[in-house]
Image 1 (cartoon, protein in one colour):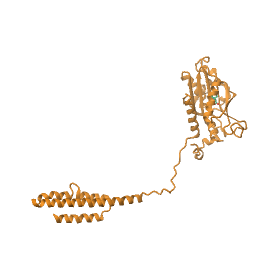
Image 2: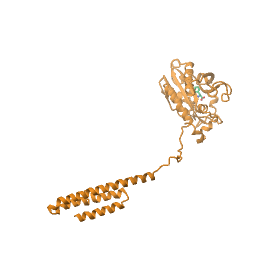
Image 3: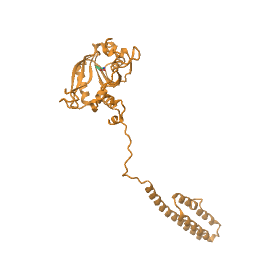
Image 4: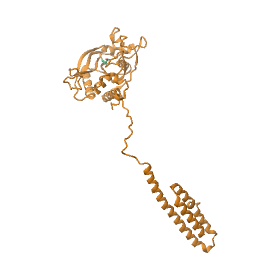
Length: 339
Ligand code: PHE
């Protein structure tokens, strides 16, 4: 038995001196020390020894077992330290190396303006309504009190699909849809695409508007001024002033064009405002009685305020761009600047 243990001890030493990985070591441990390993097997052989030899042999095997356990653990500690050191070496990161830059996406400036407008009006209790881009003549023109011979109906301005179907030229047909489907009073904004045969530095055949419509009792131009003044201050800056100039739209009476004090010079006069100190941002007015009537409501009972903002125009003013086509050319050098 002693001899057997002695040779086993030598075998273990030999194996441990050449072991290179903790995985190999685990294998050695299992061969000798696991429940079915060689050292527990020695214990089982005790029974075959003469009775008087058993205590001493048992003690001897136990000592051997303790020795083997200790040696393997020692070896394990050394190996683990070595493997960790190697891993640190292998996975070392050079923190002075320049990082690979990842391109950052950005929202389109018109999206930013739309989100901002929707946020401002939602805060004032407006609902958001999605209109339709393809309209019939009735909703785009007739119901909005645009006479047959009105120049806006001219085929040069409007993209017609058929004689009666067209790409909406403004978001105002949304007013009609709202009035036809919604019980007053209500407040709604309707952002979306509009289409006109028009193309120069400040006009594109497709652009975006946001229509606003408030229907309630006893509304006046004063309410519109308060509303749009709040809008201008939220959109540009708290010291922005607004002024109304008389204008004409068939669907509002009276109609106004709304100017804000120039965001560039604050009203002193500069190139952006062409020396006037004012910049036009939108059109609006008190909803024409005939529009309310056309939608089956009593214009003596219900009054309305309406306005339409060009979102590209707001974006150009806000971000200092002078050509509307910069929004559509898809040049990431321009578009990635709007975070
Ligand atoms: N629809 C008009 C336009 O496209 C703007 C507008 C909307 C004016 C609502 C008055 C009321 O220019």
